[in-house]
Length: 109
Image (cartoon, rainbow, N blue to C red; front, side):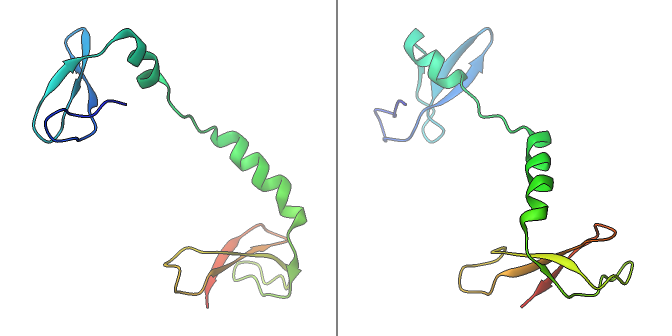
């Protein structure tokens, strides 16, 4: 990471034709990217959505079951889990997934 010598802001990579320069978003200062920095700016994080779904479906059987009426099919058993979806000072959201049809709904406490 490089910082602007004028104001200390993080320099961001910007394409200038066929080359890349590091540019300060605040004051516009630019400097060329050296070979050592190019590798650091090329790395990217990727998320494999298929694996996320696979992990979630495998973990479903490990969730506890509770008595809850499914609004879609009327089944009286569902998997249940809680997740913090709002601010930390508010209660978590309860999610339910029907054991018969797979419909998922939520309940705010």
